[in-house]
Length: 436
Image (cartoon, rainbow, N blue to C red; front, side, top):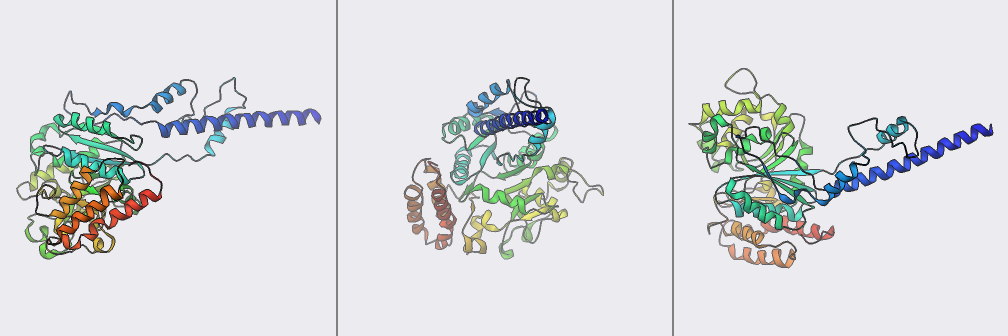
């Protein structure tokens, strides 16, 4: 019996050593995975020969180099269910190790993907939007920036100079359309705006994505709109806000010469997408009895309706979701607040109650004096520097500027423009964030 007892004790000791070693390797791998900066080669389904997605020079960090050198010696691979400890390590057979590994549920850190398309004179607007996204957001951000070639160096120089690169990364892409119809797509509505239609086909490895126009400003964490993905039911693939709240001033219900979603249409300036579902879905349409996938549907839609659409790709999205209404989740107007919500009197009840979450300065209101409230907020965020005190350098000066706009309809309700911003700043400091 003593011999058997010693054998059992020896087995227990070896098993314990094996567990300790595996614990140390797993914890080390997780620490370095979080500390490193993930790299991903930009994939573009319709790229012309010679075009390549540009990556920031600083996107491969020290953590990744440490990770690769460490993995030369030993790795706990998520794709090999039968890994074994090295022969010189105290351990038993692969059964113990595999059983141990599967008993631990490891959840990777969630990453938010944000895409924007910038052409022409949109560099400053885009940079200001990206800055507003970084200031309050909690989760790691990956920016997918589609821009004309001449803007790439400017983006790289600016973004590489920003601190807190552990909070975000970016990938630069060329403007890319299907080669046989590239000119037609590029000229649709505004230069490059229809690029957003091809994001599910280009970013094939991205599961979910938030697309925004360049004239968007985040007044609360991106995390909050990202959470709407959890509210999607089993049929919903995207989320947008209505084009209008008040039908009497609506555009689609008064002037559109094509089908549109709901009572007043939808605005595509802020578009949250489950791109995996988009790529898998077959869409109903009015061109054939057969249901078509996203990539198969775009060109036939354009050919049929190009003489009847005014707002380009947004009109095409309205047509798509008119025939597939169960596929769209609509979020309240406070998540895509535009001048139309206040220039004729306030008509966004959710913003009145909770404040504005995302500001959309369409029609160039950031750059003229027609809507000074919108311009004041844009200039405050544009001039803000990372590390400045958010209360005394951003919020208080902005509140003073907004008080000067009371002669306008939007200015009369200027409190709703800073309500969420104030809350975001309070939460920012309450959670102990530093420097942003």
